[in-house]
Length: 138
Image 1 (cartoon, rainbow, N blue to C red):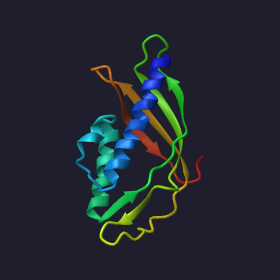
Image 2 (image 1 turned 90 degrees about the vertical axis):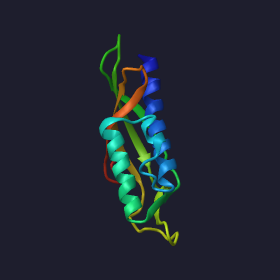
Image 3 (image 1 turned 120 degrees about the horizontal axis):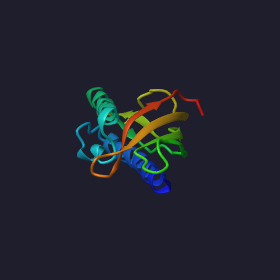
Image 4 (image 1 turned 135 degrees about the vertical axis):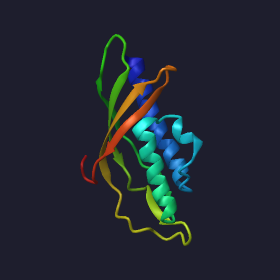
Protein backbone atom coordinates (compact mmCIF):
# COMPACT_ATOMS: atom_id res chain seq x y z
CA UNK A 1 0.00 0.00 0.00
CA UNK A 2 2.88 2.41 0.71
CA UNK A 3 4.19 1.89 -2.83
CA UNK A 4 0.76 2.73 -4.25
CA UNK A 5 0.64 5.92 -2.17
CA UNK A 6 4.10 7.01 -3.35
CA UNK A 7 3.34 6.23 -7.00
CA UNK A 8 -0.03 8.01 -6.85
CA UNK A 9 1.55 11.15 -5.40
CA UNK A 10 4.34 10.96 -8.00
CA UNK A 11 1.72 10.74 -10.78
CA UNK A 12 -0.20 13.68 -9.31
CA UNK A 13 2.89 15.89 -9.05
CA UNK A 14 4.04 14.70 -12.49
CA UNK A 15 0.71 15.80 -13.98
CA UNK A 16 1.15 19.31 -12.60
CA UNK A 17 4.77 19.50 -13.76
CA UNK A 18 3.69 18.48 -17.27
CA UNK A 19 0.90 21.06 -17.16
CA UNK A 20 3.22 23.87 -15.99
CA UNK A 21 5.62 23.11 -18.86
CA UNK A 22 2.81 23.07 -21.46
CA UNK A 23 1.25 26.24 -19.99
CA UNK A 24 4.34 28.32 -20.77
CA UNK A 25 3.15 28.29 -24.41
CA UNK A 26 -0.47 27.17 -23.81
CA UNK A 27 0.30 23.99 -25.76
CA UNK A 28 -3.05 22.27 -25.40
CA UNK A 29 -1.85 19.43 -27.66
CA UNK A 30 1.35 18.68 -25.73
CA UNK A 31 2.01 14.92 -25.82
CA UNK A 32 3.48 15.11 -22.31
CA UNK A 33 0.06 15.86 -20.79
CA UNK A 34 -0.90 12.19 -21.14
CA UNK A 35 2.10 10.87 -19.23
CA UNK A 36 0.45 11.30 -15.84
CA UNK A 37 -3.18 12.14 -16.67
CA UNK A 38 -5.98 10.39 -18.52
CA UNK A 39 -9.74 10.58 -18.88
CA UNK A 40 -11.47 13.59 -17.36
CA UNK A 41 -8.22 14.93 -15.89
CA UNK A 42 -6.48 14.98 -19.27
CA UNK A 43 -9.51 16.56 -20.91
CA UNK A 44 -9.68 19.27 -18.23
CA UNK A 45 -6.00 20.13 -18.65
CA UNK A 46 -6.24 20.24 -22.45
CA UNK A 47 -9.42 22.34 -22.44
CA UNK A 48 -7.89 24.84 -20.02
CA UNK A 49 -4.78 25.20 -22.14
CA UNK A 50 -6.86 25.53 -25.31
CA UNK A 51 -8.87 28.34 -23.72
CA UNK A 52 -5.63 30.11 -22.77
CA UNK A 53 -4.25 29.60 -26.30
CA UNK A 54 -7.47 30.95 -27.84
CA UNK A 55 -7.38 33.98 -25.53
CA UNK A 56 -3.68 34.70 -26.12
CA UNK A 57 -2.55 33.79 -22.62
CA UNK A 58 0.48 31.93 -21.30
CA UNK A 59 1.48 31.03 -17.77
CA UNK A 60 4.68 31.80 -15.91
CA UNK A 61 5.88 30.31 -12.67
CA UNK A 62 4.98 27.14 -10.82
CA UNK A 63 2.57 26.43 -8.01
CA UNK A 64 3.74 24.71 -4.86
CA UNK A 65 2.11 21.56 -3.54
CA UNK A 66 1.49 20.10 -0.12
CA UNK A 67 0.10 16.64 -0.84
CA UNK A 68 -1.33 13.88 1.30
CA UNK A 69 -3.13 10.64 0.61
CA UNK A 70 -6.75 10.94 1.73
CA UNK A 71 -7.75 7.35 1.03
CA UNK A 72 -6.77 4.10 -0.65
CA UNK A 73 -9.42 1.72 -1.96
CA UNK A 74 -7.71 -1.51 -0.83
CA UNK A 75 -4.83 -2.38 1.48
CA UNK A 76 -4.00 -5.64 -0.29
CA UNK A 77 -4.38 -4.61 -3.95
CA UNK A 78 -4.80 -0.83 -4.25
CA UNK A 79 -6.05 0.48 -7.58
CA UNK A 80 -7.45 3.89 -6.60
CA UNK A 81 -5.90 6.56 -4.41
CA UNK A 82 -7.41 9.90 -3.48
CA UNK A 83 -4.76 12.62 -3.19
CA UNK A 84 -5.45 15.85 -1.37
CA UNK A 85 -3.36 18.95 -1.94
CA UNK A 86 -3.10 22.46 -0.60
CA UNK A 87 -1.56 24.10 -3.66
CA UNK A 88 -0.29 27.68 -3.69
CA UNK A 89 -0.56 29.40 -7.08
CA UNK A 90 0.82 32.76 -5.88
CA UNK A 91 3.90 32.38 -8.11
CA UNK A 92 2.02 30.86 -11.09
CA UNK A 93 0.11 33.52 -12.98
CA UNK A 94 -1.19 34.16 -16.49
CA UNK A 95 0.18 36.76 -18.89
CA UNK A 96 -0.73 38.11 -22.33
CA UNK A 97 1.37 36.19 -24.86
CA UNK A 98 1.72 39.20 -27.17
CA UNK A 99 2.76 41.84 -24.62
CA UNK A 100 3.99 39.87 -21.62
CA UNK A 101 1.72 41.95 -19.40
CA UNK A 102 -0.19 40.31 -16.52
CA UNK A 103 -3.58 38.99 -17.59
CA UNK A 104 -5.24 40.31 -14.42
CA UNK A 105 -6.97 36.99 -13.88
CA UNK A 106 -6.90 37.53 -10.14
CA UNK A 107 -4.29 36.84 -7.53
CA UNK A 108 -3.05 33.35 -6.94
CA UNK A 109 -3.22 31.78 -3.52
CA UNK A 110 -3.71 28.63 -1.53
CA UNK A 111 -6.46 26.35 -2.78
CA UNK A 112 -7.61 22.82 -2.09
CA UNK A 113 -7.29 20.22 -4.84
CA UNK A 114 -8.65 16.68 -4.61
CA UNK A 115 -7.58 14.16 -7.22
CA UNK A 116 -8.41 10.58 -8.09
CA UNK A 117 -5.35 8.58 -9.17
CA UNK A 118 -5.87 5.10 -10.58
CA UNK A 119 -3.65 2.20 -11.53
CA UNK A 120 -3.92 1.66 -15.28
CA UNK A 121 -3.96 -1.71 -17.07
CA UNK A 122 -0.24 -1.30 -17.85
CA UNK A 123 0.51 -0.90 -14.12
CA UNK A 124 1.21 2.83 -14.20
CA UNK A 125 -0.65 5.33 -12.06
CA UNK A 126 -2.43 8.25 -13.70
CA UNK A 127 -4.69 11.02 -12.47
CA UNK A 128 -8.18 10.35 -13.80
CA UNK A 129 -10.02 13.32 -12.30
CA UNK A 130 -9.40 16.33 -10.09
CA UNK A 131 -11.22 19.31 -8.68
CA UNK A 132 -9.64 22.67 -7.88
CA UNK A 133 -11.34 24.80 -5.24
CA UNK A 134 -11.29 28.59 -4.87
CA UNK A 135 -8.40 30.59 -3.46
CA UNK A 136 -8.50 30.49 0.34
CA UNK A 137 -9.86 26.95 0.70
CA UNK A 138 -6.79 25.71 2.55
